[in-house]
Image 1: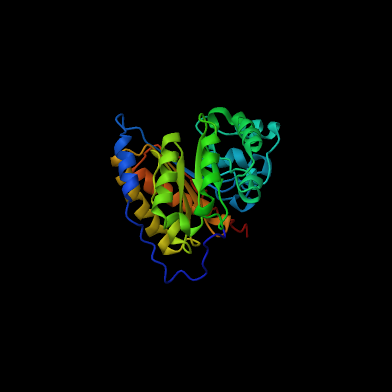
Image 2: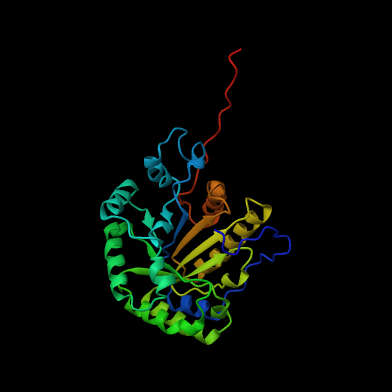
Length: 303
């Protein structure tokens, strides 16, 4: 992920902001009486050939990558749908390749979010969501990422988009313009609609844009896009801080977490996912599915 990426992170304050007033109120009004909780770890893609020897077999062909991916992660961002709707046969094949509890989270079309900017897109919403229904019970959240220049001045088409989105599907929203995190009235208005529909605000934790680490929770499910810095020591301490924060959310009623492990280069996503998983297993979810790195064997000389 290039958004918010910094080459020099020495001056970055990685401390998580305090939980905000809205999130406390929302969780208080949605108590988890039966103590349901599920933590999912995912990555931005499964097509990284450099994962062979890490979590894929050394000689795994590309058409088997998704199968092996789903043995180590139980969710995926599915960024490819941002650029076009895959063929129905492709979606069905993907669905049949993964285990029963796996969740796909397709990213909404760029033509709608960035080009049309959510205007005059009723037919696009219908076409996209109808195709994503092919995932059936393996469909998680459809997520909408707005461009960095999409400000609160364009809040009306965003509210209309959310209102028009199918009630029986889940939506997660990622906002990037700073105005959304400084205009409390607009943010509260948006949050109330998201909560009423059962939709989530995506929280992005990246070095160069600390404002998008907003801690606004609008549903008992949270979605976190965590961007590490090539397994720098701060990656580990940041994950540890997130575990403490999610423990607090869980005590208040949080039911589900989608935690996506990003690195500047996808090569290191299994390592980051492995560390996240080990920490989750200790304190949050003993049944967590997470990357188990393959042991590298040394080739010994015969002479």
